[in-house]
Length: 194
Image (tube, rainbow, N blue to C red; front, side, top):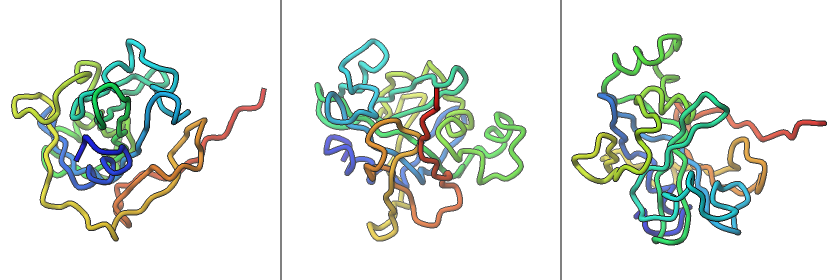
């Protein structure tokens, strides 16, 4: 499933379970990013760098990056080797390890907010730079992705524009489980005036 087109792979990740640091999260929202030249919002738009090298495959590995000088975010690499694409994990529901997730995010008042948003999801799971380049499908990996029994049917998946991107604003490559309370709020990127 992960070796196909990035938008198809993104949909297939909804309902999957990501486990790390004693916490498991059922994925409820994701965002697809293609590679070189075709997706101006992608980290691989201008080609391979040290930071994005893992996006060029193979599928099933983790692309973790630091953003805004304070947050870790995680993607699942998709597609065929040599062609960059990845799916940003935007939100999920903590399905086990609730106490550990709460300890990592003590200011959160509602459990449904523990992994609501890509940085919060990584924080709840304890994912940081050490998660870069891991084989998420390996049973021995400290960060594991498993296909669950809660995958939503196609008619229970919504699609819309990606959040906060500066290019390809209206490309409907954000996917979420319709009506799920852990899905993050949509915010379109607004350019700063100089």
